[in-house]
Length: 253
Ligand SMILES: Nc1ncnc2c1ncn2[C@@H]1O[C@H](COP(=O)(O)OP(=O)(O)OP(=O)(O)O)[C@@H](O)[C@H]1O
Image (tube, rainbow, N blue to C red; front, top):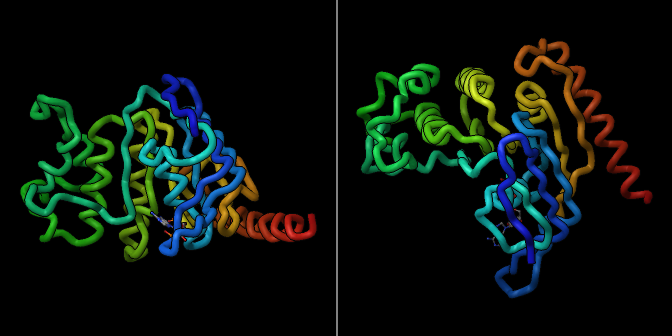
């Protein structure tokens, strides 16, 4: 049905989803993605932006290799070291923060030095605590640390800052920026927040309503993370206007 492979260090992410459907409760198929083609250069940061329920998580799961039930082709970048951050932090409640971070590490995890990672994410004082004692912001930090602990060459994040206080979200965006600049990692980030995407990404992919397909792609001017508030506002305005035109064209054509 589909063809999935891992492509090596300098290769881009290449994902083609000709069709992806789920079966609804009454047994009828619901088409969620159709004719989507996405290419992201190695080491760059892409943002998938789309309305609620359009199929963003579905696309991310396929990119992760977690869902092979689609028609199309996946060529994942890197050598297969995947880091993933879900909408909910998904920490094991009976393990400490440090044990959660070390969860996916190889057989001798005590040897892996996490000092820098813990420092960038401000988790030093919380390593011995349990997830139930953490604020949502701290739990999200622990989930990000767990994804980076494996030194991923391919990173997938599904709305990791949703429902956080804006001050906390802004700080976490800064931390994510620092981590993705420090190591070469091809990153695909899902959000419904255009401003967040313009702040973080090198390349934007704007999705249609369900069934999702890309209606607009744009490479953003560098430097990533160094864009001023004015630049972010004007790029967002431009994207909104282009997206409205793309939707109009699609309806007419
Ligand atoms: N396992 C499943 N079985 C049946 N339908 C599903 C399944 N997973 C998702 N769906 C449906 O597919 C559609 C797309 O879901 P998906 O979670 O990919 O969207 P999303 O854009 O990530 O949503 P949100 O913005 O709310 O997070 C939704 O209508 C959802 O109800």
